[in-house]
Length: 195
Image 1 (cartoon, rainbow, N blue to C red):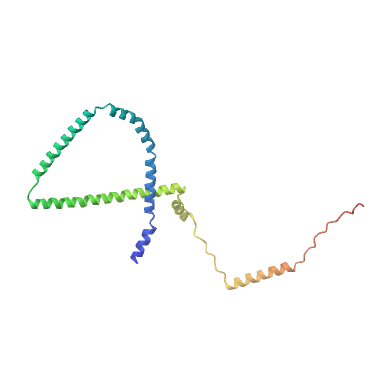
Image 2 (cartoon, rainbow, N blue to C red; image 1 turned 135 degrees about the horizontal axis):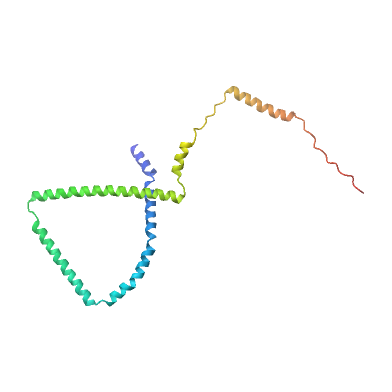
């Protein structure tokens, strides 16, 4: 029974659909920024292309080679520093590994909480977007209507005596209509013809 309840709850929860609507709304919002970015690139492109054309290939090659040598020297210095600082004590390495694992679990839990918060925010935005797209606030109106509407009046069930009287009245009325004499329709007088 619990599985059925879980499935019912899962399929009746509109939050994933609201999340999808919120994501679509965010995508549309970001897409509206694209024409401005294209225009900016279009205006900056000629200057950048001209700068590349005017640059000396040998100067660019020397600059890249210098940056590569710097990066290699930095990496070698870091590797030497790390290798030199490694502690060969196994107990300390075990504690460090355990500490890193716990930190990893903590970071994962933190990311899970942030992801859930983001999911909730996007789903809420999606719900607002769906309401705006439909042009109504149906839930709010329903809530107000429930508060404002009076309780429905329950009609009393007629007793057998009242039912018998109503039937007798219904039979008497058609009989009264049938017994009433009809008035003859008034004849129109036709004028004498002039022959």
